[in-house]
Length: 293
Image 1 (cartoon, rainbow, N blue to C red):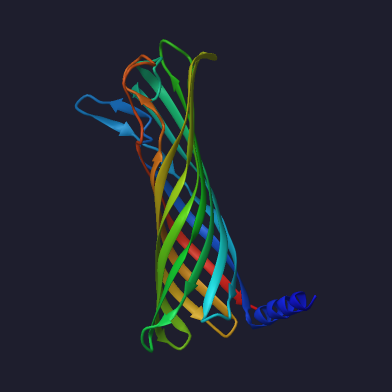
Image 2: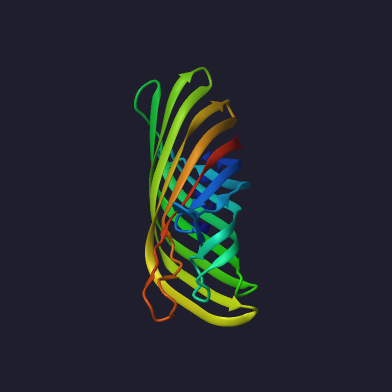
């Protein structure tokens, strides 16, 4: 009983000295996926690829942290959620890139969706380098979920509808390191820059199917393990008072090798194919508010 009382007293002492803070962030980002071209438009003198047009969409990030009483360390847990879409349309003399059932088309419509979720747990400590400069190294863990869905409809003279459906999902977890810097401009205003790198060990789930005139022609499913890297950069302006901080920042995130869709190079399922078609990037404006309690 005496040991329990001592433990409870110690926990109460730690919690009373800690300072909890809550963060809410609004995101206005644009994604871009490499290797998602859906057709080649043929011209008299030259041909060119038909690309997707990626939308700008809103998302959010919420987090909670605790300033520990041990040598000015703090812990921070955050959840980032961002959903977005992209579309593409081509007409004329087209060469389809994602179907094995048609070698020519006169109309192609593509629709792509991304559902991204990131959970980050970070431990860090800020160091005063000079009167105006502060550095904060961080160490943590990231859990990542990136789900991509891609639908393409081809139409041509020899057929009315060829629907290609593709799914590319990644679930991973791994270590994360980072470095935050802050330069005090004057008063309550600061410039800041943050960067981090993480490695997520996880699984890809890739599914592709082709339906010509409503009839299934082929289905491919692949599940495999890979380690993927993530890089994050954030820079902007901060205003801080005694219990409130407001940040306006530009963020850039690079998810390496996220496009694992299979593109067949000829008309047979057993023929040569390529995957690992490109990276996934996200960038845009972030507005954040932090409240200390």
